[in-house]
Image (tube, rainbow, N blue to C red; front, top):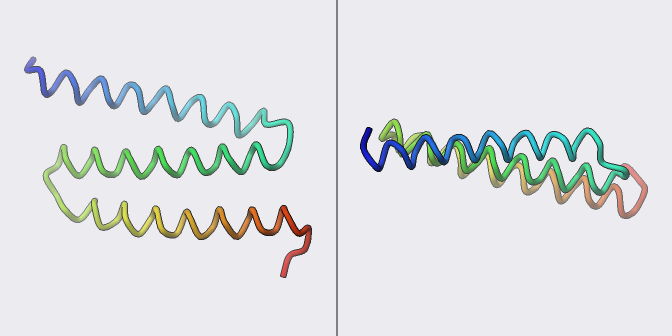
Length: 90
């Protein structure tokens, strides 16, 4: 096992642990803003996983997907935060 392969597997293990902790906060969040922050964390982790996948598969397509996904996730989180802050759905 080379050092690069070991680092890649270690990164995947860290990402898996981060996903589990983010899901735990999402499920057990005492308030809606806590769940929103957990959802934002999960989208950031998913974006990072797409970037690592692009590196592992040597495909730039996954970088494009990660970029579009992160922009859409950001817009969605901001919209949900605005709904929570104002209390209205328009």
